[in-house]
Amino acid sequence: MKDLEKKDYIFTNRNLLELLFPLIIEQFLAVAVGLADSIMVASVGESAVSAVSLVDSVNILLINIFAALATGGAVVAGQYIGRSRTDKSCEAGEQLLIFVTLVSLAIMALMYAGKGFILNVVFGTIEPDVAAYADRYMMIVFSSIPFIALYNSGAALFRAMGNSKVTMVTSIIMNAINVAGNAILIYGFRYGVEGVAIPTLISRGVAAVIIIALLRNQDLIIHISSPFKYRYNKKMVGNILRIGIPNGVENSMFQLGKILLLSVVAGFGTASITANAVGNTVSSFEILPGAAIGLGLITVVSQCVGAGDYEQVRYYTKKLLKYAYVSLIVLNAAIALATPSILKVYNLSSQTAAMAQQVILFHSINACLTWPLSFTLPNTLRASNDVRYTMVIGVGSMWIFRIGFGIFLSRYMNMGMFGVWVAMIIDWVIRSIFFVSRYMGDKWEMKKEHNSQSRETTEAACEGA
Image (cartoon, rainbow, N blue to C red; front, side, top):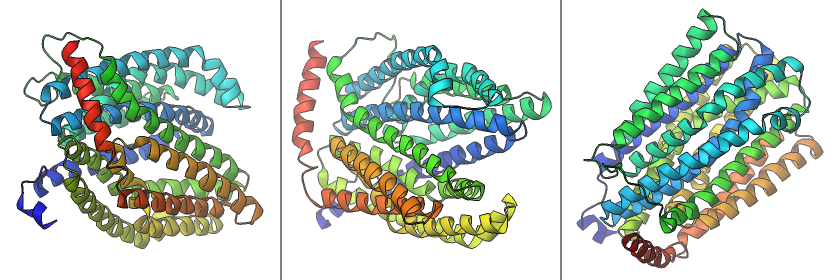
């Protein structure tokens, strides 16, 4: 490491702060606006809340798919930046944008065609008024699918360049339109679920237009060429999918597992459902800096991998893990102290408040101990093309420990709702053991041989295309 201190860093401390701070703000906005949306739609009625919640569970699955594809494109483009092949990084960006546009249009058509199946089969037996609200909400929100796909891809490309300030500002604009639109249509015009759906569509459309317009700046490392002449590059799209598909499977299975566990919690009564919901809301804030730093780690590591400098990969991984731990400890200590005041805002019964406090403090302590190792660290492996390993461990641990143990502890060990949270931490510990073991070895670094071969193959294909 002493030798590393003597040579030039790819990222200075200032570069890292300029990358990470906007990402933290962006993550905070996403969670805070989601909370604001749920509060405003509650004024429409419980049926509207249920309908929006059901449809959003499907939307989150779709967003995870696009986020995974965007990550694949960002890693490929970032590795080209590390190799000083900015022409190829631009081409990777263009391939990503066109590919996700086509995929998102196909998915949107599929969602509209399968709307009845979603309502009657996926959602199961729901009340007629909930079904009516869900139907109207889907009709509007599904049309925003291409916009959110384009925005996610464009934002990932800006992060690959190390420019997260652009994504932060765009996110602020998008979320401001969303919240203001909700307030105007729900409180001002007394709209129902349309008052939530229309601003969502408009805000996503505006964000997509902004991010694509900004990418047309020819001075950027990654930009849309002018004049634009698209040629499909099978090899490059294959490299994007090789990273994106395993990541998408992992993310989708993770979300599906959370949905399944909600049905388990629902069997323990209203107090458990409410305490679990409050715990989920607060816990989303507890991991914010770790999630943001994880996104930054993909940018940093992909460029180091592209440069073939695995010593810097390890250096920055350790450095950003330290950032994650310090920020999580500070934030969770503050939340733990503020928990009694936070719970008062929800006006909970004494039983529900006690259950919520138990899971919040339990999650807070363990977030400081194992969350970075189980969720931030694997981004180093993903950015190094070791995506199959992270997918296998992530999906396997999710189904065996979080879901399997969740059902066993809650139902058969009489731990109730708290058993689901204990199983979640067991899942974190298992992930941490496998990911740390992988990182401490060198098998993931062996992917650099694959990276080199892939680079030569892809560039040869690009040159000959």
